[in-house]
Length: 114
Image (tube, rainbow, N blue to C red; front, side, top):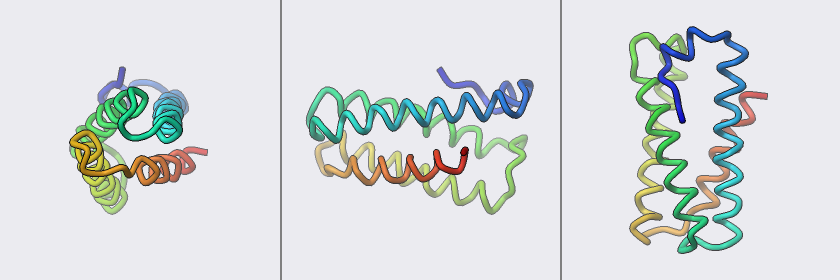
Protein backbone atom coordinates (compact mmCIF):
# COMPACT_ATOMS: atom_id res chain seq x y z
CA UNK A 1 0.00 0.00 0.00
CA UNK A 2 2.41 2.68 1.15
CA UNK A 3 5.99 3.08 0.06
CA UNK A 4 8.94 4.14 2.15
CA UNK A 5 10.20 7.68 1.63
CA UNK A 6 13.44 6.49 -0.01
CA UNK A 7 11.40 4.55 -2.60
CA UNK A 8 9.17 7.53 -3.27
CA UNK A 9 12.21 9.78 -3.73
CA UNK A 10 13.26 7.63 -6.68
CA UNK A 11 10.01 8.59 -8.38
CA UNK A 12 9.45 12.06 -9.67
CA UNK A 13 8.38 14.57 -7.09
CA UNK A 14 5.05 15.05 -8.86
CA UNK A 15 4.35 11.30 -8.91
CA UNK A 16 5.11 10.99 -5.21
CA UNK A 17 2.82 13.90 -4.33
CA UNK A 18 0.05 12.45 -6.50
CA UNK A 19 0.37 9.11 -4.70
CA UNK A 20 0.29 10.78 -1.26
CA UNK A 21 -2.70 12.89 -2.29
CA UNK A 22 -4.52 9.73 -3.43
CA UNK A 23 -3.91 8.11 -0.02
CA UNK A 24 -5.30 11.18 1.73
CA UNK A 25 -8.33 11.16 -0.59
CA UNK A 26 -8.97 7.49 0.20
CA UNK A 27 -8.62 8.20 3.91
CA UNK A 28 -11.12 11.07 3.66
CA UNK A 29 -13.63 8.90 1.78
CA UNK A 30 -13.39 6.20 4.44
CA UNK A 31 -13.70 8.71 7.30
CA UNK A 32 -16.73 10.35 5.64
CA UNK A 33 -18.41 6.95 5.36
CA UNK A 34 -17.58 6.27 9.01
CA UNK A 35 -18.98 9.62 10.07
CA UNK A 36 -22.22 8.88 8.19
CA UNK A 37 -22.62 5.39 9.68
CA UNK A 38 -21.32 6.09 13.18
CA UNK A 39 -18.23 5.34 15.26
CA UNK A 40 -19.24 1.74 16.02
CA UNK A 41 -19.92 0.78 12.38
CA UNK A 42 -17.88 -1.45 10.07
CA UNK A 43 -17.14 1.71 8.06
CA UNK A 44 -15.54 3.22 11.16
CA UNK A 45 -13.43 0.09 11.69
CA UNK A 46 -12.19 0.31 8.09
CA UNK A 47 -11.57 4.06 8.30
CA UNK A 48 -9.68 3.86 11.59
CA UNK A 49 -7.59 0.94 10.32
CA UNK A 50 -6.66 2.76 7.09
CA UNK A 51 -5.97 6.05 8.89
CA UNK A 52 -3.76 4.25 11.40
CA UNK A 53 -1.87 2.46 8.64
CA UNK A 54 -1.42 5.66 6.61
CA UNK A 55 -0.13 7.72 9.52
CA UNK A 56 2.10 4.93 10.81
CA UNK A 57 3.81 4.86 7.42
CA UNK A 58 4.01 8.64 7.27
CA UNK A 59 5.57 8.78 10.73
CA UNK A 60 8.18 6.20 9.77
CA UNK A 61 9.18 8.37 6.85
CA UNK A 62 9.07 11.61 8.83
CA UNK A 63 11.59 10.31 11.38
CA UNK A 64 13.89 9.00 8.63
CA UNK A 65 17.04 11.17 8.43
CA UNK A 66 16.80 11.02 4.62
CA UNK A 67 13.48 12.89 4.71
CA UNK A 68 14.10 16.22 3.00
CA UNK A 69 11.33 18.20 4.71
CA UNK A 70 12.27 21.15 6.87
CA UNK A 71 12.84 20.13 10.51
CA UNK A 72 10.08 22.41 11.82
CA UNK A 73 7.53 21.05 9.33
CA UNK A 74 8.58 17.47 10.10
CA UNK A 75 8.20 18.10 13.85
CA UNK A 76 4.72 19.54 13.33
CA UNK A 77 3.63 16.63 11.15
CA UNK A 78 5.04 14.16 13.67
CA UNK A 79 3.00 15.80 16.43
CA UNK A 80 -0.13 15.65 14.28
CA UNK A 81 0.58 12.02 13.40
CA UNK A 82 0.98 11.03 17.04
CA UNK A 83 -2.32 12.72 17.90
CA UNK A 84 -4.04 10.93 15.01
CA UNK A 85 -2.70 7.52 16.08
CA UNK A 86 -3.83 8.16 19.66
CA UNK A 87 -7.27 9.28 18.52
CA UNK A 88 -7.59 6.21 16.29
CA UNK A 89 -6.82 4.03 19.31
CA UNK A 90 -9.36 5.90 21.46
CA UNK A 91 -12.02 5.36 18.78
CA UNK A 92 -11.05 1.70 18.43
CA UNK A 93 -11.29 1.25 22.21
CA UNK A 94 -14.71 3.02 22.16
CA UNK A 95 -13.31 5.80 24.35
CA UNK A 96 -13.98 8.45 21.70
CA UNK A 97 -16.37 9.20 18.84
CA UNK A 98 -14.11 11.85 17.29
CA UNK A 99 -14.21 10.76 13.67
CA UNK A 100 -15.01 14.35 12.71
CA UNK A 101 -11.75 15.52 14.33
CA UNK A 102 -9.75 13.00 12.33
CA UNK A 103 -11.58 13.99 9.18
CA UNK A 104 -10.91 17.68 9.73
CA UNK A 105 -7.17 17.15 10.24
CA UNK A 106 -6.80 14.84 7.23
CA UNK A 107 -8.72 17.28 5.04
CA UNK A 108 -6.48 20.14 6.18
CA UNK A 109 -3.33 18.19 5.35
CA UNK A 110 -4.75 17.11 2.01
CA UNK A 111 -5.36 20.78 1.17
CA UNK A 112 -1.62 21.35 1.48
CA UNK A 113 -1.19 19.08 -1.55
CA UNK A 114 -3.38 21.20 -3.81
